[in-house]
Length: 345
Image (cartoon, rainbow, N blue to C red; front, side):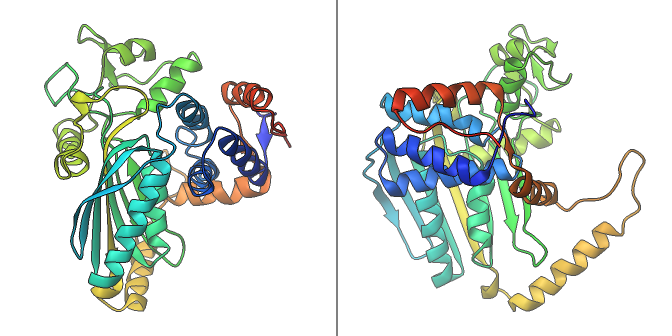
């Protein structure tokens, strides 16, 4: 990224709010997608932060994303629900599903919502973090257009099919949000954009040969991480995100706006034990983890999600870097939409 293209988070939030409002989104939808993009960028997850704004804005402008979805509850029980999102904006409908899961968990201890027929929802960690704010733990899954083979195969069946776990803690949330491929699809796209190579072992080209060329990778397949272990988790994500609720499978997915299904589960820790005791145990675990002898090549030991916490603190003070491609799009969008441009620091 260009070190000179840095913006304040509040300026980015204001600019994106103007842009999404101008393309016709109602305030609740605009608030949801802007918060998703800004929070994700602040956390340093640049593959799923402001760089996705173009996809979402253009999707709304051209009707690929339904700006006025009519959500339909297909099944509803005390702890669970399945909802058809009517191809609505992923950030908005996934936030609604998460809020419903939290509401159900407050009543019964566990709330789980399956969301189908939505568009790209961005970083799963965003929704998991909404849950942890309520003193709950979260599990989330989603699938995406086919780009990955099953273990031992070389043709596309699954998407990158990310999984996410979040746990509350008094010293900052513990977060795992990972693609089940060696590298996230967006990382490969960005490597292609920036003219960089990807690591060996991430992908096969269309002939089934290992490649470090991101363009060849996008024309071939992205491999599951950890061999059969990642493949097993990839399959599980397909189950939770699509099969369970009746969503579209990865191998039937289509355009860049596609998200076959989304699953979110909220677990009220207080329904299982005293919350203060839980926090004490989390402190003990964190202390034991950090007390582990540091291996060669490492400076320190982090808890899952801790690097993002540190990045957020830094970017709140110093600003959020913007890649040149996104900056160029923002300049163009400001002129086309007739809104004040984004200002760099």
